[in-house]
Amino acid sequence: MNYSESPFNINHIYDKFKLDETKVRKNPMEQFDDWFADGQINETSAVSVSTVEEDGCPRTRMVLLNSYNWDGFIFYTHYDSRKGKAIEKTRQACLHFFLPRVQRQIIVKANLERIPENVSDRYFQMIPRGNQLSSLITRQSKQVPNRDFLTNKMHELEKEFRGKEIPRPEYWGGYLAKPYEIEFWQGRGDSLHDRVLYNLTADLEWEISRLAP
Image (cartoon, rainbow, N blue to C red; front, side):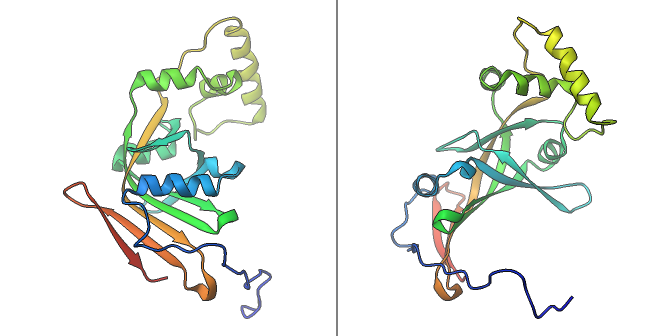
């Protein structure tokens, strides 16, 4: 391969918005709310979640962002999946939001905690019935013999729970990612991108600074 040549467009122009650290919100969750609304398209409900596994290598996957509030970001998963096991061990993760329409990224370093069981119970009853059943088929990330195993198990569960409420399995539930560092990245011309960093201090105040592009 000739490394001097690239099939990708390297002339993308970033010129839609700017980010001024003197004019941002004092609380990053308010700033996130502004940006999330500006960039909201179908894909923005998805967020990448990175955890560190036992071999020390990060692992990243996309999950559905269920909601966010003043305290942080909520998503649901299997507690004994690969991501769940990593979270249970470190209680930390990095979330990454990419908002291409407005040329923005948001990077969140957070401490994670399980949300109350009754909240997970309530949400579980709100998701589509097929999704409920699939959570019972097998534990996430476990090896299965083939696709037929999954579809046959789904048919068995459909018969078993026909006309019945499906209980939330104890290994499925929500996490609240409570941020302690949030970076807002705004694409700008000539690669002089705007980067504003929020750091949570020991006094639980947010310190705002600008980073070099």
